[in-house]
Image 1: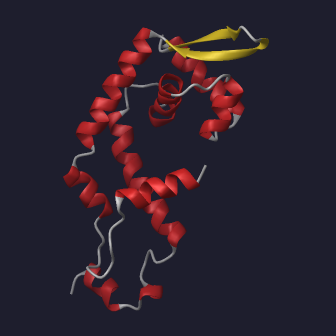
Image 2 (image 1 turned 60 degrees about the vertical axis):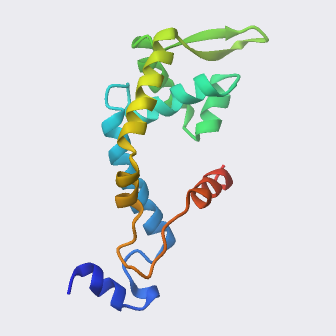
Length: 157
């Protein structure tokens, strides 16, 4: 009998991964592997991608607001922004409403890099790959629906 079969023979509360936190962590780790491969040419990989994506797609007014939105410590955010700026992907601009604050703005090169990264990510996140990542090992377990995943992501903010 396979390891997956052995797991299915156990009561649900004794199966490896029956703990929600452990299960979620494992899914996240596997997805992170896919994402890092697709984003390896951006400074700091997925972390740099998230910063660039929020800067391009959302109206985050300041560097402090960006840190809060991404739940990143401000000191970590600073060095990632430094590297994105050194790569010519973003620039810091004085906030016209508050000279103490800095706005992070994507450059044209940064917008192109983000579009390329999103395209590569879409190509890597094929239905087959998503299916392998989210397919239960045990036929008795259900898979996560995209609606449920979006709901969990929204509620986690």
